[in-house]
Image (cartoon, rainbow, N blue to C red; front, side, top):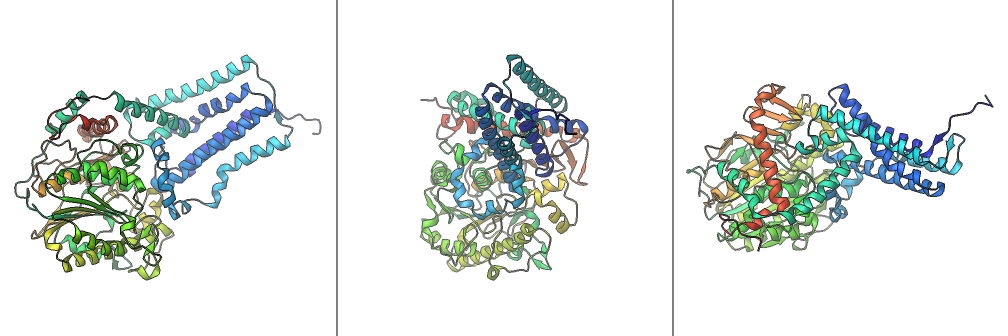
Length: 624
């Protein structure tokens, strides 16, 4: 045994193998990547290798000392990229993009949301880096270093290229035209790997930056024709029914539809909203359509009737674009427009973006009395925020359009014991348990706000619109959600959990439950029609939710869509009546419409195409 010679292994091979195995383990344990057959499993297994071989293969051109430094630094960077995706995925069920990384101004406000997502066990994701450092220091007998010849390098990089091409060949068989046809980042990571996905993302970022420089007004022709062909006229009975009324719109943070008319421990989660619905129009098939911009994306959808981008937040990436948003339109129709949010004005770049949307006033953190007693989690509690905001409403010129953004029902759903109106849910998942408490608190805040509006004489002269901005409980909590709902969370059920409440209260109107399928993109034309403002010349991808001839159709940012009878997600068509997969042909008629909606909207944003339209949006104008 003493004379036995162990095979020598190069530092390049050790580093590549360790990172390859770590990445695959992360795929299987930290990401919820659906695998349908052995070919997809093989693709998932091999997709990191080509990238890692090339990255660490560059060290073959270096001297020993430089090679070690390069490998150690590169290993740490690659590990950090993987870990950043893991932490981001824990809450958002999504992967990082270049635009998201530019949103660093938000980081100072994230606080407990980030620390809640990081565990002590996460040290595992840097264990290989620590091991590499130890190997370099102690130089075990199995480690070898030598200078590589030109032939060695050629063979090595040819092998790396062969693995990469083999990977892409299998991908093309499994998912043809992956890079040109998908809006789904999970699909990209599953097939080309986390690291190659980020390279592709860099390419997309460069491409999007070039699009605006190359764009001209002629690109609007097809889009304009599409929008005109799909325009739905308003319901004559509802058009102008709220003409001259104030508009009070509340974005309900992280509020999903499944809490409406439900109980925890025998107590209602949303007792006020349950009653308010009975005297309002309630849309129970209404979906959020946000992407990585979350709350800011919901604002963008609601104000512009355009889809958010698949990467990053429009509020950051395209805040200088020309838009034809609801505030700007209402300014021209005699309204005073304001947004109210007791947070730093720069969060989500709102102070800049609101100017592009046409808001006349932004009531932010300095406009509120905020102290330790009335704050929790992300800032000013909703009850105090809404109560203090009534004074701002009273001071506004009438009629006004006001948008409120609540905070308390935000991950990680922190709430002081004295503010808990119901006992907590008792599952093994603290996030889900806390969620019901903060939703109940939000409901109480809205109840007290509505009463204050009545006391101050604003209620009867205002329409009140309440909508959920995005999901609060991600798929990482499916076990607890399955326990609460009493059913398995399949991809179909997961899509149904993307429903958010939409409540429209109009003074003097009895209201009722509306079953039409819609999304946040439909709110802009709905509001404008209620106020008696024509939208026929607007570039809107949504349609009036009260219109008699509208189609039941909602497209989500990842390309999933919902119709009256079917739901399509993750390459599967479901029958809504049964919740079971059905023949793909049933969903096929809607594929083109869903793709057109997203791609046309993207073109408008990336190319800043609305800058080529005249004020009435009826005639394109030249670049000059």
